[in-house]
Amino acid sequence: MTTTHFDTAARDWDQRPMSLQLAAVAPCMLAQLPLSPTDHVLDFGAGTGLLATQIAPLVAHVTALDTSAAMLDVLRGKGHANITTHCGDIFAGLPGHYHAIVSCMALHHVADVGALMQVFADALHSGGRIALVDLYAEDGSFHGDNAAKGVQHLGFAPEALQALAEQAGLRDIGFREILRLQHRNGRDYPLFLMTGRKP
Ligand SMILES: C[S@@+](CC[C@H](N)C(=O)[O-])C[C@H]1O[C@@H](n2cnc3c(N)ncnc32)[C@H](O)[C@@H]1O
Image 1 (cartoon, rainbow, N blue to C red):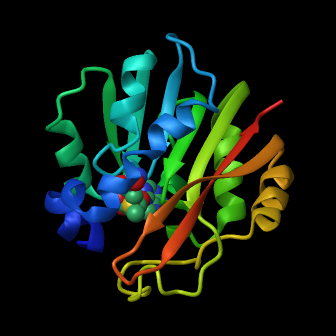
Image 2: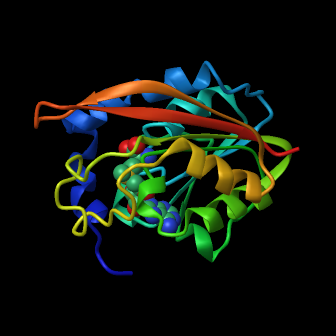
């Protein structure tokens, strides 16, 4: 696999000002996501485990999926016994079925989000939930060098994402703002939490 922006950034990822702010995502998400100690959770685009490491103590198992081996190396170094890393593209297939699928700041790297919602729906157990965090629509100034960072979407309009999720068979879709990221460019970028359920 070719080296990506994330492979290069992995070693210092957790110390970035953005990552320090993103640490607040997991508690906000967990307040909206019912989980049980027997659950198996998938973290899509898990990176160094900002979400996975905070969810793992609450559930039976977390699968941390990412295309970047270097990001997952950092996560494995944190030594969580019930987190399994899986290095690969989500469209290459998933190793199991899940009670919840979570994600933080990975959706905007996927060109075909409709296909992604279908992968999520197919991989959830009946009654399983999604909890997905990403940027509301922005003007491209968040990443700046969008092409170099593999950005496929300049954030999202909730109604467009909702339509794609419903086409995939997910229901009870909801959105709420959960965090505003303070950028070094002086601007604030709001993040949404998208929740939903497989009937
Ligand atoms: C902006 S990082 C976010 C990492 C972590 N969730 C966080 O909040 O710090 C996006 C991650 O998604 C991963 N990613 C992007 N597209 C992917 C795909 N198709 N399959 C698996 N992982 C993917 C990237 O390698 C990267 O680690």
